[in-house]
Image 1 (cartoon, helix red, strand yellow):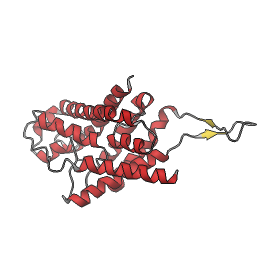
Image 2 (cartoon, helix red, strand yellow; image 1 turned 90 degrees about the vertical axis):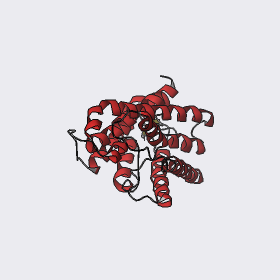
Image 3 (cartoon, helix red, strand yellow; image 1 turned 180 degrees about the vertical axis):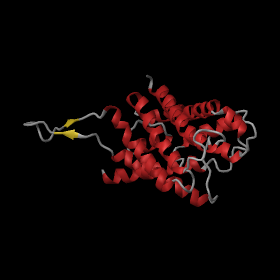
Image 4 (cartoon, one colour; image 1 turned 180 degrees about the horizontal axis):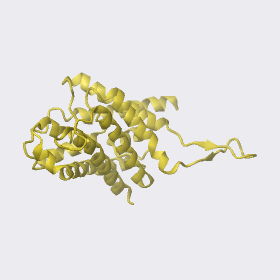
Length: 248
């Protein structure tokens, strides 16, 4: 698969499953209605796992502009590929938002709360305070990108082999699990302030979808907040890459 197409598909899967679990919990008359924060954070963690599982072999499964920028700042990814990756991720986020709406369309019609409908597309802070909200996104994304940069493939030493040349062991599909667990941990520990976007494409793409879709009884798309889930993750990713470079 072309890596740009892979990033589009992977991000669409991420948003379909991630925002899908939010829709399952907050929209009216769903099987998962009222499931709570643990269900949402677990759903997002597994959404990351599935997305990485599907497209990791084709593009590295960044599925997040902050990851692409962080890897490029750290010298682990070609800057020339960043614009194409980011464009594909934003398109995938938009597509994922549309798919969530189509999947849960009857439940949007039954839901009166416009804020709940918006929550199935993008994030919003519990306490709206720009500096604090931005700090939350910076820290959450720092943890994500720093952990990704420090992750290593397991190795083992063949009997009688060269100690300086260990054999790298591929984990196959299980290799997608660590990043999903990282996102699950961030959601549980750091997600209570802003809803932990930690991914500009996961927030901006679906927010655009919310703005254009014919959702009954929807509120505005909260564009006054929209810059924070974009700027915060990019700053956090760059800071993580900077620390990584200092340690190298």
